[in-house]
Structures are given as C-alpha cells and as structure tokens.
Length: 276
Image 1 (cartoon, helix red, strand yellow):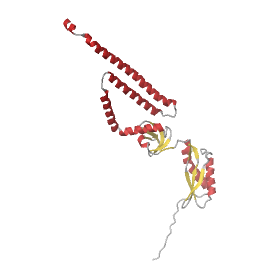
Image 2: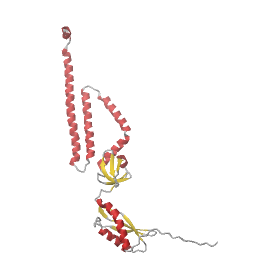
Image 3: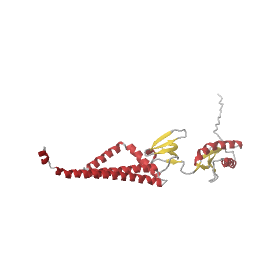
C-alpha cells in the first residue's frame, strides 16, 4: 500500500484541482454579479414608468422582465465559456428552438406584438369607453395579450389584441366634452323657427347640457314627408348616455305641448269600384 502511495504523484493533480476551483469560484462570482445586474436592469426599466405617469406600467414591467432574462442568458453563456464549453452550437440550438416555438405560437405572438403596440401608443386606457373589434364597453384591463371590456349589461368581453390593433378604434372617452348627435322631425306644415325654439328651450333647461359650446340645432334634411333637424348638444363625457336617452322624450313632450306635429308614415288607399 505504501509503495502505491509512493508511486502516486499527487502533485500532478494540484494544477487541475486549482484550475477547477478557480473556474467554480469565477462561475459563482459571475452568477452573483449577473443576478445583481439583471435585477438592477429590471428595476431601472420598471422605474422609468414610475417617473413618467403617461407611460404604461404593464409594458415596462414586461420590458423589464425581458431585459432581465437577456442579461441572465449572457451570464449563463459566460459561465459555460469559462468551463470551456463551446456555446456556439448551444446558441444555434436555442435559436432554432425559439423559431419553432414562435411558429407554433404564431397567434399568441401576434397578440403579444399588438399588445406592445397598444401599450406604447395608448389609443385607450383603463376606464375608457371604446368601440373596438365590433364591441363596445368600458375597458377594465389591458394586458400583453388581451383587452377586457365590461358591457352595460354587465358582461365581460375578452378581445385578443391582434383583433384590435390595425383596425378602427373609437375612444368615446378621449375628450372630456362630447357632442351628442340626435335627429328630430316635424311636419312640413309646422313653423321651423317655432320648432327650433322649443328644442332650444329643452336643451337650455337640461342639467347636464353645457352652455359652452352652445348646442347646435339646424334643419338638416327636407325629407319626403318631414323636415328633419339635427340636434347636437354638448356635455361632459360621463353624462353622455344620460343626455342621449333623456333628451328625446323631453323634446317629444315639448313638441306635443306646443302643438307641433311629429310626422309618421301615412298610406293613402284608393278603392276603385269597377262595374261589371
């Protein structure tokens, strides 16, 4: 046994042991530094949105996570290189895997890209009433893949972002003041100035209709059997539907009280009595 120990040259393994120890310590140091840098980059990106209220938190949290994982990916590659691993093939393999996953999740990636664009350009925000993808409702949530609406009858509608981005978006809440378009008809026999005065009086007495800008009331069309007025009062955005659904009844009652006829379709039937 003593002869075996004497023949075993321990010194020849010392450089190898030192080399591995150095590599392991360097890898640990790289990992710790990389984790700290990744966390710092994430906090830096997320902090940008906190300093600027107009920027969207959701987008910058996503970008912060992406930046963190990119830093960690470089850290892992550096550690593998430190141990002499050829990372070129690994990078190529990861690239091919990423391409395959991207093709498999093409729809999800389309929603993600659309979500990023919506969060960058912000055509609407949480709390807005919008028309998008053929749906109307109050925006309750915007994430990277979907937009969630709440309808007036309390339904939840989840719309993929790819169906919204690139199509027409109507944001009813963008401006604080809104015009409410309505149309009313009177008979040809009625005095248009009197009818306009009755409509103006109803609008002037409505609690939610603004004095400035003044309501717009003009004759729009001379139809076959009626004179049509276009009526556009202005109100605060939160009162839009109150005005839209209360004014027509008030104008109907006011026209009736003033004896102004509201026309409706008539049919004249002529009977011809033919003698045999």
